[in-house]
Image 1 (cartoon, rainbow, N blue to C red):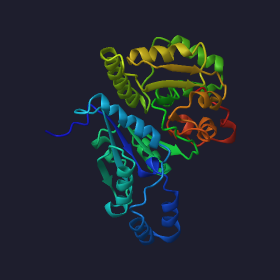
Image 2: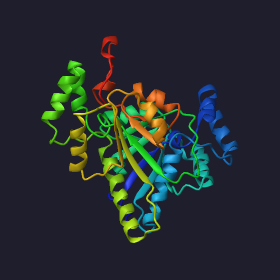
Image 3: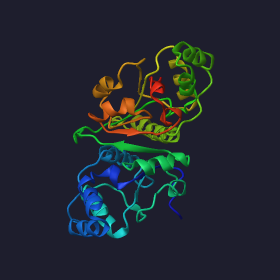
Image 4: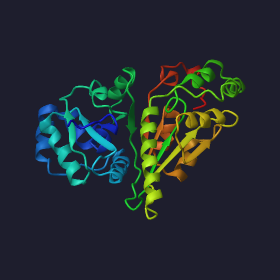
Length: 320
């Protein structure tokens, strides 16, 4: 029987998201493809260091302990390497004891066409062009941003933080604010639609599948009092009351339980995120991400009106 991806949470992962490839990329840029090939062969038994998404992926894969015979999580490597130069990546995956066995090597081609074929709910890469091409094609994708954050291996939780507008929900509400720059008008709009769930955004399907795993953890806890759930899901948004109600009602309509929510009303997100300390944070705005990326793994979701080219006078903030 074929291995069914439809019912699992499938992450597509570029090697640039999983590992730090700065050294080998420099060889490729400065010396060319053949020198890069030789370099990777010569170093194929030297493990690559952790990248931005490593701690997130390691913890995510640990959730397969909930059902080892029918694991809920699948992570597939989608690499621009060819199989020869990609061998070092596979050996590094093995060295770091990551239970990833499926890989696609594309010899320089963009991986976006394979996202729907592999039922991928989220594609992560450090390659900005690959991420934007995937998003423009309507597929969920995020660009990991460089960070110096340290992963504490003794921390067994998996903390995932999301911005709301333009990430979990579409940018309908964000567009209202961008057109008027009037916060009171935005709040009135959201009050009038408080009981109408938002349309899904690019990471809504990812959140829904994470939520199913959260329910598996709760069922395990109910049957085994010694089990401690590891998933912790947060929303960190620049919204505040009264526009918070539609967010909560949207989560109810989607049958999703969020552990924490921060309705910050313009307070800088970094100050809260440093305390929350998520293993990954998703936002559609570099305005929030660039400060956060200095202290924690952060992912840019290049979606919606906020990510279209702007004139100087357009850059006056947002509600997401």
